[in-house]
Length: 65
Image (cartoon, rainbow, N blue to C red; front, side, top):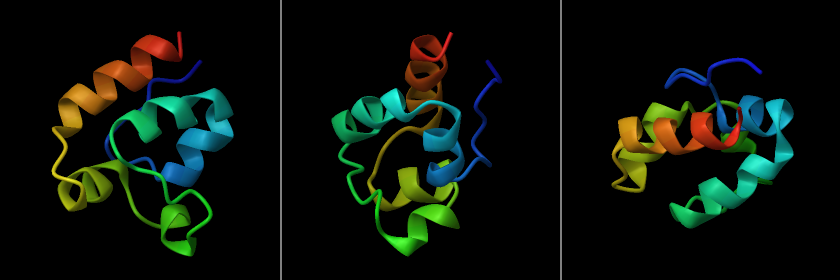
């Protein structure tokens, strides 16, 4: 599995492993069908949702091993 970084889009994260949706949902990020999810980076989404991007990345990468 690839290491997920803050410049990945939500769409790229889900393409890597669609089970990661549960992690994103846990952080309040539930707009997967929104067209923005294909363009918005994790860093941008984290800022919008007031989430610590480094903590989010640690959880995504931990689950994605």
